[in-house]
Every structure is written in structure tokens, then in C-alpha cells.
Amino acid sequence: MGGVSALDGVLVAVAVVVTAWWAVARQRWPVALERLSFGAVAVATVTLASEGLRWQVVPWQGLALAAGLAAGLRRWRPGRIGRWGPRLGQLGLLLGLLAGAIGLMFARVPMLPQPTGPHAVGSQVFRWTDPRRAETFAADPRERRQVVAQAWYPTDATGGVRVPYFEAQERLPFRVSVPLVTFLPAWFYGGFGEVATHATQEPPVSAARPTWPVLVFSPGWGSPREDYTGLCTELASRGYVVVALTHPYESSVALLADGRVVGQSDATGLLSSNAADLLAIRTADARFVLDQLAALAQARPDSPLAGRLDVRHTGIVGHSLGGATAAQVLAEDPRFLVGVNIDGTLPDALAGAQLDRPLLWLQSQDRQAEHYVQVRDRLLGGLRGGGALLLVGGSSHQSFSDSPAYLSPLGRLVTGEGSGTHAALIATTGDVIAGFVAPSLDGPGDPLRQVLDRRPAVTEARRIEPVH
Image (cartoon, rainbow, N blue to C red; front, side):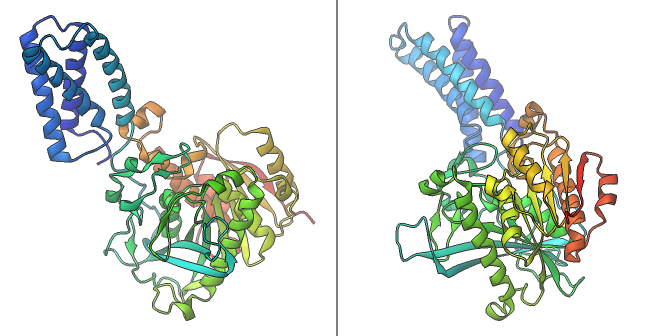
């Protein structure tokens, strides 16, 4: 599903041979070259008709069509190619091969890791409006702040309507931010409607427990919550209700209650240089969502989650800026009993917070900037609730998101991301988070010490005892 089909392979091989022939040896065996050129057009047409328009193979189809056009001109308009024809052909070959190679690095339909916990996963999306807060980034000053929250939760159901990857698949903004790069264009996601999220829409909550502990999840700056589907479903399969947030106008995709799809506001880009301002908005979002979850049984009695949430045992997890959000929320709201910062840099003001509840700092193997290390060590040195610093071997900053799954088998080979590497890392991350938060949330999960014993890729760089 994510790789190159046999027909694609034929197209690539024919396109490379025929364009190289035109570029360097067009005068040799002209009849054979003409036949191969028209054959390349036929192969391109067949791939388009049988598999639809896919951006990953468009460059190869373009090369094939260019070869057919050159063959047609030489047969019916032999004087039209001119002396610049070979030069343009060589340039086109170079650009086409480059674009084609890039296309083959990415999967048409990403394959997300299969959750490894004992539970199947269900999901429900909520859209809540906070009447007390104006929307900072909206053009209309009357607009109130909305927060979109997707709950992933344990279920006993084994079938049902599958959860789509993007709610707004057919209406994505022109630019969609992801951790792997600054942004990707909407057409990049053309095949994402077929992504298997390994979850079903709104089944009953698992009967294994009367209520389930809650983990609020905050994504990286600009990233859609959907880009953490792998990690969220992994945690849900282990026995947590994971509520992933979309922060509208900062997230690159947000489907609002009135049906509008909004992307990232230019104003949030200006604020990104001052993380404290964004953290204030994100923190208010997380606290507001917990308010709504606490009132869910009264406000939404029809929800499968009504009466099944143990909101007295709630933690917060975040990646990158979301990790800094987790620390900020712990500093401000005592209802959140535990936090996990995945590779997030803190602003200087937050580094001095003496948190009185446990915090896990989960760090990638990337080389960290000096400021990252300074604020990390300052915060960890003042933890009154204790915590831990763990290093995940073989990981990069984006490994905790779904971005590595966007790569094709060829892309994984080139980048060194083996076919099972991302899935193993997500399972490891879920195991470690569950082991750390379980004591605080009365949740399922082995003690962290046991988790680390069976997860040799995770190194305990520091165990932080409470500071009295």
C-alpha cells in the first residue's frame, strides 16, 4: 500500500531509459527509440487510468510523455526540435529524475503502527467553545475561542466504522505543517483518506474498568493532532483515554463547529518567536478541555465516554511545544497529576518553575542545543514532585510523530528508518509513558523500572528525587 507497485516500477524503468536515450544518444537506432517513446506514453497512460493521479509518479509520467512528444516532433515536424532540443532534453531529464526520486521517497498511503496494548481503540471528536475567551487570531472580534479534542479510548469492539486520519481530508488548507519539514502542500496528502488508523468511530468504552484515567495530549507547534495518531492509539490501547487537542489558528488543520476549516494564522508565526504567549493560549485550552471532560456526563450523556472518565486522575503529555505546554499546565493547574515532556524546549520563565507533581522528560537522540540543555537541567533540578530524564536511542525529534510513516520503503532505506523502526519506537514510547504515569493516575502499566529493563533502547540518564 505504501510502496511502488509493479506497474510503477515498469513506468520508472521505461522513463529512465527512454529519456536518457533522448538526452545522450538520440541519433542511434531512431526507429527503436521512437517505438520505445510511444510505448512509454502507453505505460504512463495505463498507470494513470488504473491507479489514478498520484503525485509520487507524476514526474515519471511527465518524462514518458515528454519522450513521446519528442518522438512525435521528430517524425511529423523534424525541423521543430532545433539545436536547443538536446540541451532542453538533458535539463528536463535531470529535473525529472530529481523530482521523480523525491516522489518515490514517500508513501502514497502511510502505514501507521499497529497498537500493541491489550485493548482495541475507539475515538470520538468534540468541538467546544469557551464563551469567556475571545479568539486571538480571528478576524472577527466577536469570535470565541474554540478547541477541538479527539478522544482515543479503550474499547472491546472489534469492528465498526473506521476513524479517518484527517476529518477534513477533502478540504485541507494549502499548507499543512508537520515536524519533519516546515510544511507540506495539501496535494501531498491525496492518498491519506485510505490510512488505517486502527480505530473505530464511537464504539462503547471497554468494560474492563468502570472508569479510565485520562491523558490530555498537546501536539508540536503548528502540527495537526492527526500527526500523532500512532502514539495516541498506542497509549489508548494500553488503557488510557487520550484526548488529543487541536489548537485552532495555530494548528495547520482545524475543523470548527460551524464547518469551517481553518489553517495556521500568520499571526501565530509571529508569536512562535515568543513561546510564552503561545503557551498561555495552549495552557488555557488544556484547562478548558478538562473542564468540559469533567462535565461530559451532564453535557453529552449520549457520548460513549459519559460517566466513564476518571478525571480525578488526569495527566498531560506533549511533544515539542506541546511538551513545554505539559510543563506549563503542571505549573498552573493542580488537577493534572503528572506530566510528560517529549523533546520540548522550555522558555526561560518556565525553567524556574518548581513543579510539585512528577514530570518525565523524554528526549530524542538528536544533538540538543545549548539552550535546550540549560532550561532542561534547571527545571529538573527544582522538581519538588520528582521525575526522570530518559533518552530514547535511535530516535530523532520527529520520531514520536507519524512523520516517519510518510516514507515509502525506499525512503526508509535511504534514511535508515527500517520497516519496523518507527513501529518499535512508538511501542517503546507508549510503554515508557504508561509506566511513568501509572502510579500517579492509578492506571495500567508496569513499574517504570520493569519497562526500562525490557526496553534497552531507553537509557535512564537521570532519576530525579523530589526536592524538599
